[in-house]
Image 1 (cartoon, rainbow, N blue to C red):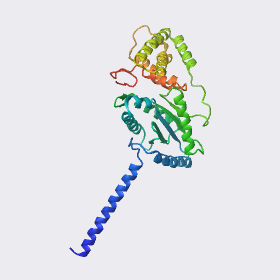
Image 2 (image 1 turned 45 degrees about the vertical axis):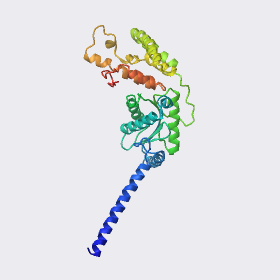
Image 3 (image 1 turned 135 degrees about the vertical axis):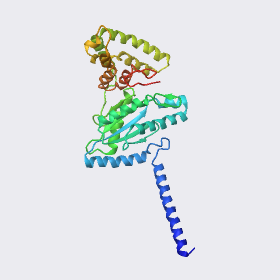
Image 4 (image 1 turned 90 degrees about the vertical axis):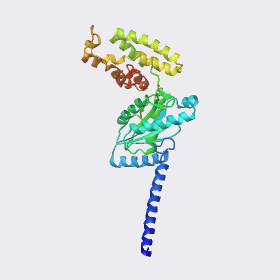
Length: 324
């Protein structure tokens, strides 16, 4: 073998080694940007870097952008009841769900122990809210080890003119606090100014007014709702649910048929059996009820209960066919 041939072989081996080093460096950089627990998510550092870039781009081209902060409801209880290994499994599972339920160009990270951040370029606040609601519904069916049915409190903020990335994060944080104060299990879109008083989160008077409206609309439905309240509360207490959860279930039971205010009289009060088209209308009442309650800030958890009042364990219910 001549010197020139040996030199060519060495040069080829060197090029291959350099290429391999480049691949390893790229893999290390990718691994360094990923959360060690939820590998589908970015680290907080990588997320903030991308947020700064996307905020600048959104301002430059006058494009919408939203940020969401998501906090797991009752995560401390999960750790205490099942141990930290199960808590880690819950975090990893939620990370995977967030990745599955968001678009390719949306980015997510774990902000802290049980808090996640989500960056949604090209999305206004209302559009981001719709995406988050789909995510919350998906989480209700999630199973992570012995834990099933997860919920989150979410704060959403749309980017405003001349707003820095820290300010839009702070706005999302304010909205998250509103969601927590209202009982969790819901997403709140920030409106107003950071630090502004968000008002009273109590909705007792609103619930009573809605129940009275339902009673006026249909005497039978109103009386039936009152019976369902007591049965639901007894079941919840027998399951050893906490006082807040029992109160939430009571409100959901009281208002579970509120959507019937949107059903035409000829269907609602028909003396005989409903035909197929009439049943199609009647089956809309859980969705109508959810829509009514979501118009009232803080009633997101109750709205979700109302939407799912006709779901069945075997998956044969409606409107979403939830099973288990």
